[in-house]
Image (tube, rainbow over all chains, first blue to last red):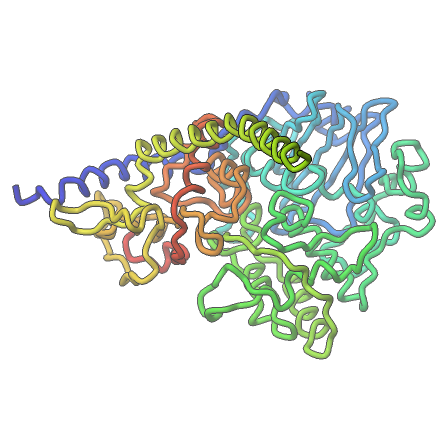
Length: 366
Length: 187
């Protein structure tokens, strides 16, 4: 009888224990099937000779000018368009790809190939995502489970690289106006940013914007983007690089044209129209919903001139899974980018700077 | 005569409008009812409505229905547990839990735009429950939220749950952020 008044709470606790167990042990899983990606990377059409890294005819290598930070991974990227098909570039900020388009991104750590990510566009307009783990002998790579694979390679002492789940692939790739990231007018512009963090020089034979247009693989691209290749028109070289970094690393989600538009944070750069600093109007001096410890009751997304008081910088620097940005896909903060963005906030966005007006929007709960 | 004709036309238009919207309203009511049923049997109140001690023992405080962990209830650090076999502790409100994942506080599911899910879209609600990530793209949803179970709900059921949650009274209650394991004592 003594436990009578607790009976209900006890029942709830029992139910929650089951729920907690389910959540603990199945948390990384996605809820949807990955689709029909081949079991082996060699069957996806990337290679003529996988063991020796010889790509198949028709596969185009490319190198975006603003790479995504992936804990220092060295990367190689390729695209294959269906024969005779072209990309619809009439919206130069959201290219549309023909069914059958395939893209790959290879990740290496310490000179060893670890994984190759793959996405393919089906006839139904849906993208399939998969990642392949390289075999120890480097002869081929095997498709990872849909829920991903943790800890496959050491990227720093005590820090190991995870292969992403299909759900995580979708979370990034399907957050913006186009699922293809890093292959766009801005990213493939021949007017490359020399200060872009971790910029890799374009390799011989890399395809870029003029090459795509010249070979008929782009349809509808506005002519002026060929005459004057896209470039972030920032007030300083440092600002250009910082805005480019935020575009590549944050704007797959934080894009006014994307799924999280109602958050009211837009870090995307557009090659069509507008003030290149306009995206910052949604961040500079704007209140943050996240309240990281020690940042006060009303922290700002970006506090002009004060990187230490800017939630954006704090979250970039954090690798606490509950606070870090991006929220997944990286376990190490990017020191080079942190230096760049902190200097940008301190010196380019100082109190004397005029900032674009913030749009009137309703920030939403995060 | 002209005024009578105008009135008749207006009445006819209203009748047509009512006839056209009636099934829609009925459909919405049915969705809300279905959503209420699902939210009830899925046990959402067990964590998202704070428990209080009443004359019949511990019971959910329905005046704060689904508003999450009360922001006024500032908890001390969770007690440290000895090494196994015990794994987690809960507050007596059942709105806070601490375990190997850290300390978590049940979210405000009411339609308050600032502190609840009033500004969420139905798609974001569905993506959150299907991916286990905040808004479908952010940080992971932490235990004890049984999202892997909810991920199996049908599209129609998730729509109904969202319709119900958007129909209940909005309660302003800013739930604390989760506390990572390093700062939580119950490990």
